[in-house]
Length: 114
Image (cartoon, rainbow, N blue to C red; front, side, top):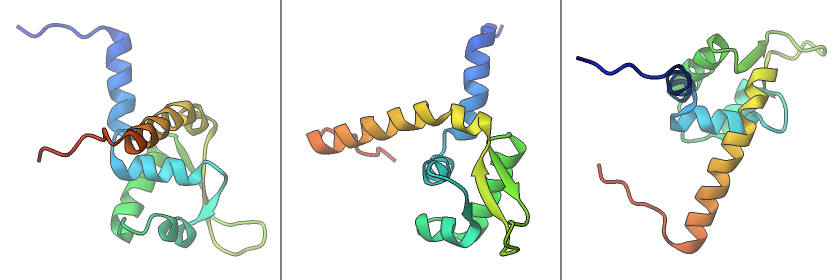
């Protein structure tokens, strides 16, 4: 018999399922200062291939975290930006960044086991 998960834990798990992967965190961190066009975003996250980046952006759009303005005022292509909901996630992202930097500085950064 499965034990029921309380609603708060379930909601946290839903959010982590969306933002809890490497490329998603990289996208949110990169869009923190403001909107970017796809190529600028791709250059800022060079280890993500274009297909992965496109797929993650779509997923973040569907989750309401990233907005996609299909044409800029200057007519120079589309841009991606954090939505109001996406900006609400920034304190979480900032905390992850701070912990990672602290661990790196201390030399206690955990090693991957896989």
